[in-house]
Length: 70
Image (cartoon, rainbow, N blue to C red):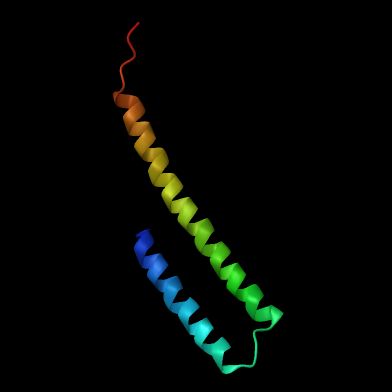
């Protein structure tokens, strides 16, 4: 899997390109806003998936090392 900062840089470059295109027009249309919102949602989903998997792995490793006295 790609590291999260690579994904973030890729998305940032596309968001910048979309913003530059939007500046050329008189105003952004609902379609452009919809595309931007869907792109942000995709980044959140991918980021949560990558971070969630790593976090779950970390908690599992920590839980395996914890010894509960009886």
